[in-house]
Length: 603
Image (cartoon, rainbow, N blue to C red; front, top):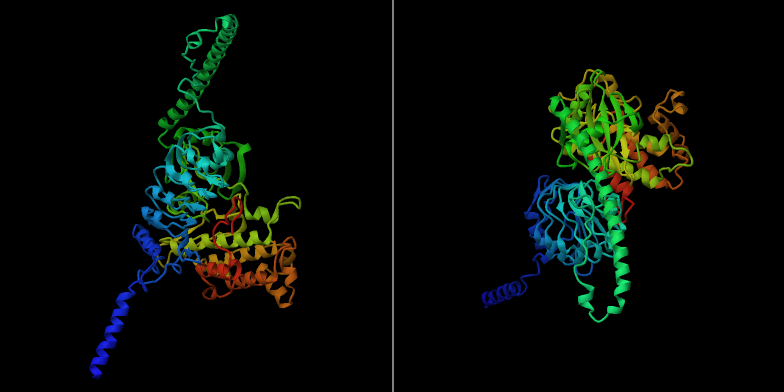
């Protein structure tokens, strides 16, 4: 009898399991994400918690869901070194609102199925290696407000359907290989040159480049129909029509004369340009030492145009100078702007600086590192071509701007600290071999128009190929930022970079240079000065008085991180990955690490 009861209970449990097989099954959106994962190359295993055994994908890395129905609302996976392609399965995520896959190594095309995600509001795919064109049906994404496809290898025409996106307020298609006329329609008519710069073969009003026929001007074709045949009964109007035709004929002759003169002028201009182009090309061909190399298709201009611009740089174009050369601003014919560092070959060690920047920046890419576009060896000089960052250096913002100029508020300083930390953490933890910068300072933190920081100047950097690679015979860097053990031993390690970053944090908080006279004359550096004021409980004297929006809680958190970074014992300093985590958790939380959904602000 007891055995019969047990069998019955077991049967009921088994039947209940069969009747509810989906109680532990992954949602359809979760299955779709796993399909997408299968086409990605997750070299760092950052998506390891995407597991088919889960009930929901809502706790997976980079995934956010709608609270009501647990459907996926956001895929946020930037800066994760993901390779592979974007799976067409993405079209199954019917409630997806945000797709952020920028600053990865994705290739292939943008699948047309993405246009099935009709609730999309923001698409960030910049700085990958995507090819092909923009999906023609992109106009179906009626809620789209942000579209950033810049710095890829996309080509073809820009679809006119983008003009139907009435909510679109940020568009960036720059630095690709798009061609043809930009449709001057709807939303597309509201964006200017900045949205399209760096596409050599685009023309249209937005880029201030007229679209011309092969003759150099638009062709005007007359109508072939006969007015008399069309309206045979109106002979009384023949006289008026004759006068009009005569006038139009006269105007036509005048127009032909004007166009002929214009044609002659254009041909003359083209011939002059062609002669200049040929002269440059001959010079390049004649001198075997002239060599231009660009990386990842990131400089879509003819080589001769680039070399011509490089050879024409003069003192009027100078924007800065350093220990090994001069930095120029180079403006291309389509107004694309780049920074060029001319290495002075007469200075000792210049060849090593040039080769080191090539070795390091030619093989890495990160949103918070300055982007090396290419290099050129000319007979008299070596040149490195970078993105031009219009806002200059952090040093300029903190120490050289007058009271009437734009100042850095507290939230901007926190974003700069976090971005700089991410760039440095990438060098220490994600590069192989690891890279020690050795010259972290405010003048080597450059800022773009959104005040997003870029770590620059890798002329002193070292690759940690083996355990002894960090040992140097000559101390390099800038006094005030150098770790004490590095000054004593000449051993450059990741922890000496961490110390320099801690000094940079103090510079952001105090607004003072590490060698400010107010504490140097007391025999202190910025670290000792800060510790003295904190012991005296004078926190208000530490913070830059120009920072009106600084709050005591985040100031204390940043100072605590800076104190740990500048610890006298190197082993007690955190790693840069830990610094990034501390800044994200203690300072920036709950602010996400990407764009606010606005055109002009970062978070």
